[in-house]
Length: 65
Image 1 (spheres, helix red, strand yellow):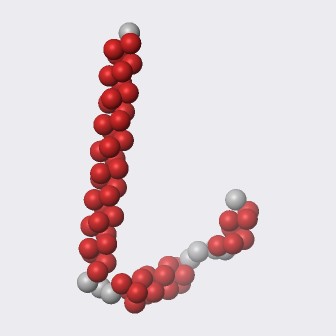
Image 2 (spheres, rainbow, N blue to C red):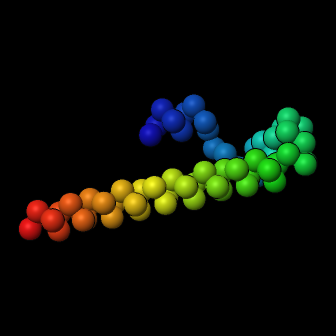
């Protein structure tokens, strides 16, 4: 943890603003909603797949009993 703190330092409001400005410059205002939609869709699919995997495991345990 200390190594991470030393590497990143204290992240405050000015650093967050700089990061947001850099992201806006790199991707532009029109691309960011598309990127966020894609990220949200990916997270949604990941959660759905993990829930299906959990359900499959539960069914296998029930079948063994």
